[in-house]
Image 1: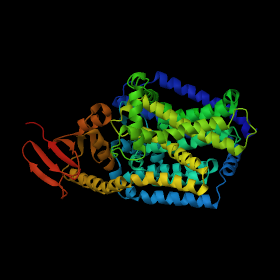
Image 2 (image 1 turned 180 degrees about the vertical axis):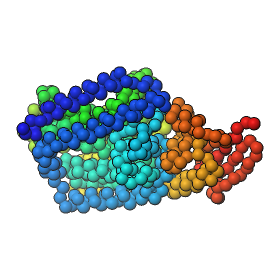
Image 3 (image 1 turned 60 degrees about the horizontal axis):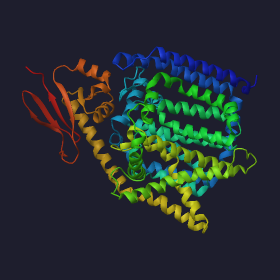
Image 4 (image 1 turned 180 degrees about the horizontal axis):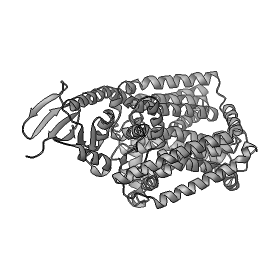
Length: 584
């Protein structure tokens, strides 16, 4: 039997597996996470991870002939020449060199949120359930955590391994962006976009610590590209829909925000191919891939992923409302958008100027969709393939930006109290659309002027944030050295179990590779570590208090400052530590 003939039975098998998983999730739900319920769910994840790997391998084997066809189609579609490969090599090299401080001082890059995938991966690599618990979300490890666990199995758990994996995802994102933009929007747009990403604006640079969001940049860009190319006929095999579905499933397993790329891509296919194609050829392949990719995530994330998604959409009652939409839109435009191209502590801008900056970013996204709608029709299968591809890429990128912004406006994050990291998926489309818009706006005058204009805009945006970025690099060394010395002092004084504010607790725990177990003061966020600390803290019960900053702490060798009957107190470059003795 030909490999293509095996596809429908495989899809049926996957649909059955999905149904079984949904039943498992419906009848077995630990409810509000506790230590026991969380560990039970974690153990259930493992068989489904193994089943995921087995089905993925079986699917690849049964469809190996079609897989060879897909590889040939991809190579033909990309068709990067020697100049293109040289440009990409320069961009990746520049990105790696610019990220060197992050590799040398990895502890300075991280915080408690960003190390959680590392803690989970360490436990997976050691063969024990991951007891991670974040903001009432209990899960057994994302796809990113399992990839990191595989890396830790080959080497050993380490802080630098987490930073390296995050940067690998980012470099992959740069490569995908260049390849897609080169064949669709041209070499100039592709070159200036990846150079902008290679030396990212300060905000993006500081947010590259979040492995799961950076993975979504890579997965989202690949997903958008595949669906756009298939919609335009640049990739002809329907099996590409299965690949796209697999990426969406894996991406959702890691971070539900990948759905913006999936929705934008599906809308593009619908416009170019029509309803009959969507429910005839698109659906079986795409849903089969999604089912396979989601399988472990349905158990690991379970309803938590859907709860996070509804929370981000504001559907659970805690998000924005139509009455506050205008205020939220203004906040996103005046603070969120300009944050993408600078830092959270951006130089003050007046409201009018901030709206101009926001319009300069939002305008290209809206114009890209309008251009796509005007240049391609649903029934124009005979149109120039390059024109259709350009229109499809513009549509999927423009819709992705618009959909994500609308989601953000109605989400609980729209007040922008904290740096809006959940705007990061906008980098999949925003820099490329900005470069495309400027280039095409000026191309009607003189070609050389268009190149100068797009180069000036993109390089100018990068240069504006360089002073902040260089200052951040200086801080990395201090933070890394402070964590190292703090760790040494805590071990010297026998502190093995302690409490700390959330942003420091997991950071210290992962840096020490759990040689020190630090429980968040917010006990409801981690019942597992709470049980460990409370059960094993004998004698002095330590209390670790984070300092408000580095400037006022002495930059001398950390050591004992005061000791009396009731407590022991000392300072390190990052923390002031108070060890409380039991009352007598």
